[in-house]
Image 1 (tube, rainbow, N blue to C red):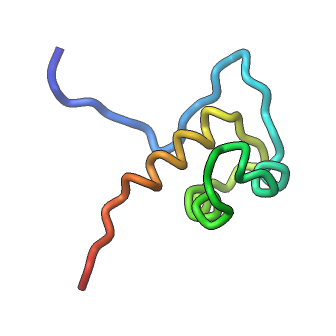
Image 2: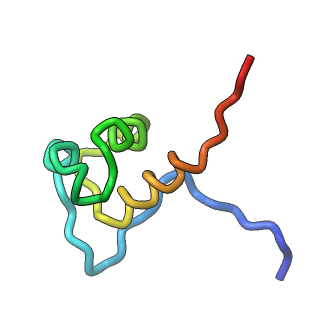
Length: 71
């Protein structure tokens, strides 16, 4: 196996996971252990109406690991 790995921007939920409306998720940042601002930033590019917990957690982790470019 090679060291390269292709990752999709959009994660897929596990088959057993429940899906939650975006509005409900946005009202519960504490359920993900983050502030409202982090949750808003993490979900800024997510356009679907429903997400699983694992999809939101993945988006939060990716958002936290982003590098900030200074000009």
